[in-house]
Structures are given as C-alpha cells and as structure tokens.
Amino acid sequence: MRFFATILFVLFFATPAFAAGPNDGILAFSAALAISVAALGGALGQGKAAAAALEGIARNPGAQNKIFTPMILALALIESLVIYALIIAFQLAGKIG
Image (cartoon, rainbow, N blue to C red):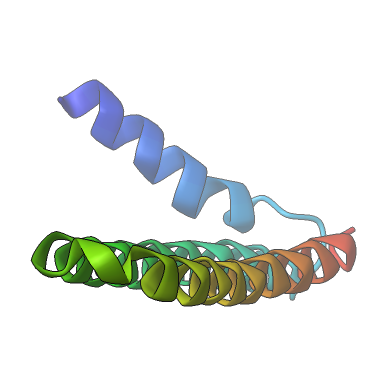
C-alpha cells in the first residue's frame, strides 16, 4: 500500500515541481485536475442515467424503445463533456515547456 501511495505522490506532486518554467507546474496540475474531475463527474452521471433507464425498463418493459434512445443520447452528451475536458487538458499540457 505504501508503494502505491509513493507512486501517486511522485506522479501528482513531484512531476509538476520539476517542470521547466515557473508556471509549468500549475499548468500540469490544472490539466490533470481538469480531466480527473471531468472523468469522475461523467462516470457518475452516466452511471446514474443508466441506472434510472434500466429501472424504468424493469418497471415497464413495454417502454424500452421510448427509454433506450433518449438514454443513449444522454450518455453521448455526457461523454462529449468529458471529451471537451480532455481537449482542454491537452491544450494546457501543450503549453508546458
């Protein structure tokens, strides 16, 4: 357990500290924070949307066609927000160095 904690400490704190410029550490931390928060929020949103859709289908199997398409659309929109955060993280990481 200590080994993994040490690796996490090195990855999240030591790498930005040894970056070349004065703002590179802040940019690296911002990029990591942007994608991690977006991925966490997207995963929670997709899980909640899928759970609600499956519960609705379980309660009324006849409404599967009316529930399935909006659920897929909602999942695609949630995932597009995560991809947007990934693009922002890439842009921030591109400014490093």
